[in-house]
Structure formats: C-alpha cells, structure tokens
Image (cartoon, rainbow over all chains, first blue to last red):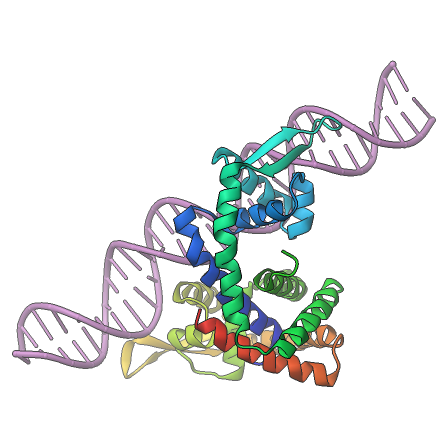
Length: 140
Length: 140
DNA sequence: TGCCATTGGTTACAGATGAAACTAAATCAG
DNA sequence: CTGATTTAGTTTCATCTGTAACCAATGGCA
C-alpha cells in the first residue's frame, strides 16, 4: 500500500488541501470549491459557469452551488450574457477581490512551504513529472 | 491555478483514483475505503481497526463503516482480542482473499499504465519526490 | 416556420463524509 | 479497591457530493 502510487497521491493531496483549507475555511466561511471559483475568476474574470467548470475540472453541479453561495455572499457578481440568455457572466465583486487578495498569499505561502523541501532542480523535475502524469491519467 | 501545486495534485489524484475505482466499484460492489481495508489486510493480516486507520490514514469512522460492510459481506472476519475486549482482530476470509486476488492485478495494471508515461529514471525521481513531499506535508 | 436535439444551468434525491457525542473496556492514581 | 482518565470503536446528526432528472434557451434542419 505504502508504495502504491495512487494511494500515495491521494494521501499527499489530502494532506496538502486540508492544511491549506484549514487556514481559510472558517475564517472566511469559504469551502474549497468556492475558493477554486474565486481563484479562477481572480485570474480570468468574466467567465461563465461552464467555463469555470472546465478550467477547474469541477463538475457543473459543484460550480453551480459554489456560484450560488458566492453570489449570495456578494463575493461574485453575475450579469446576463446578451447573446445567450442561459448564460451568466461571472466576475469578482470588490468584496470577492478582497477575499482573493487575502487568501492567495496564504495559499501560495503553503505551497512554498511545501516546496521548500525540494531544490530548484527538483521542483522542475516535479513540475515535468506532474505534467506527464496528468496527461497519462487522462487516458486511463 | 493550473500551476498551483496543491490543485494539480488534487486533479491528478482524483483522476487516478476514479479511473481505478471505476474498474472494480460496481463489479465487486466495493467502495474505495473498503478496497483500502482489503488491500491493507491482504498485505498484513490480523490488524485491529485502529491499526488499519493508522496504516491507511483513514479516520476511524470511515474504517468502522468499511469494516462493518465487509464483515456483513463475509469478506473479512473479526475475532475477539483476548487481551483487550474492545479490540477485534481483523483478517480476510477466503472470499476476501479472492476479492483481493482479483482486484490487486487490476489496480497494479492501472498504476503501471500510468507509470508507462515515465522512464525508469523518472519513476525513481517521482518516488523520491513523493516521499519528500509526504514528509513535508506532514509539517504543514 | 415549426419541431427535435443539444446545451447551460438548477433541483432533487440518495449516499458519502466528518465532527462530536457516546458506550464500553482498560489503565492509572491514590 | 475506587474513582478519574484514556482508549477502541460505534452511532448520530448535519453537511457535502454526485448522479440523474429536470427546465429553459439555443441551434440545427426540414
């Protein structure tokens, strides 16, 4: 078990995600899916729910729920797409920007703390390996 | 987002786990936690629920539930620990062994298919990097 | 134009999950 | 020994999650 790759990936991913989420979840009353939506909108504003789902690999139900909560909390703002009445174009509000601005450094600091275990060269290796594995995993 | 390590780990881990689970879940009526319990007992028989929780990093509630279902399905067998009446010593039954024997090759084949994307040298790198990251993640 | 298939998104329901409370047994302190 | 604390494991409850059904708008296409 302890040398089974899928298992180790799962453990590692859980440890990391939990550690990071622990730092913002209750403080900001923000779930992981919500944070992902904020993160992607922070980088690329004016996406539709569909586009967010694609960008984050979340399923559309999860996006729908996260968006609903974020809109209710006035952290993102939805405006109608005049070309297609089904779509809504989403972007962070000032409050959403503020949340993004406060959490992003926390998340990046955790990532950095983790990566501190690796040298610059190893980080490159990791990056390359992950890319290859992500592609390969697609074909499973 | 697409270069944020925790996020990429999460995507990779999910892709891999889902792909593998898809191959045994309905066929064997087995959840991922249940499979983990079987896998660990297959390698090391006669563990208590506590020990399984430690070995798999599952929480004790998850272990309790998986064990209950597996016992009900006669895939594992529980016998009292004469030194401590609270504990039960768990091991695979013949049926459980059979499930293990049939799923293990499937899981290993998936792992191998994934690793086929990497050279022998890269596999070593990956192994080393994961070990380092797992330790580092503990300290988050 | 009018009908059907597709798409964006939400709702409903059922099952999974986790924190916290709980039970029972074991250990420890005096 | 007796009572307090800890430990193994279960149950409860509230929340989360995913699948499937659904609704409304759009895009063919005859």
